Length: 316
Ligand SMILES: [Fe+2]
Image (cartoon, rainbow, N blue to C red; front, top):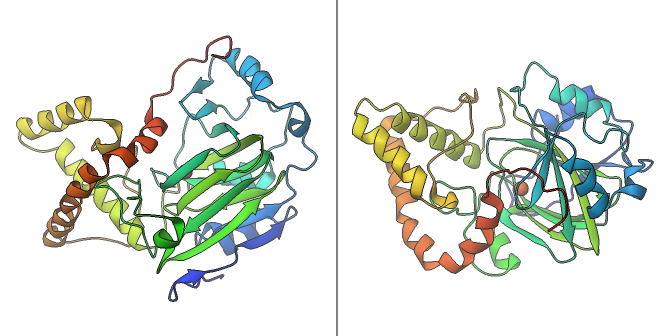
């Protein structure tokens, strides 16, 4: 099984595989140990590389009742636009595995202009992502969940402390450019920052969450704790606590809401005592001060949190 240089901080070169890799090989080397990899040339022959642009995609998706739009991406079903691309076997096998949670929508579509930045964060709900670069190029920086960045309390958004060199000091990280036709596998809770390099950048993401993981990291533990706290407050024996949580989530801005999309607690080898949990909550609460101090930097994140809505017939 492949291992990561998690003991020593610093840069590591991301693994690369060819498009004929089998699901079994991919699982053993990357999906189970949760190690990022680029699978090269998968979408090289896709018709999508020629016909996709913002106008075409908007037109097509606005006719699909199941598709919706969030502020930065479109949601679509697995059978949407399949005349333009072929879902690789290893993706189908990953999404259909009995070891992953069922979900209604698996696909996100990103359309970004040059210079668009997705700032430091990790994806919620312990999602695994297969990200295809359909058009253009993007530069990625991935930080291992074993050397986590500090986040705003109970969120998956990292506190921006300065330039990338400062953010990456003491971290295990990799940096690379992903080319057209390549698929990047982003394991759960890996921090990332992404910059669109070309005039037109289009990405397709398949998402899934495993029911069980053995890849225990500092960030995974934090996610499990977030779930435990949420579950505790949501089901508290005092109605007042349950109501307060509901009211807080109703009026608080998206980035501080105490709510996570897990349907079930993921099975992990990690457990925590009540005393340690209280200590961790206190540690996160101290970071509230930093949140207020950095309010102007948080604005960049808020755009990513709008609720999906119906796609309008014509582009705004
Ligand atoms: Fe992300």
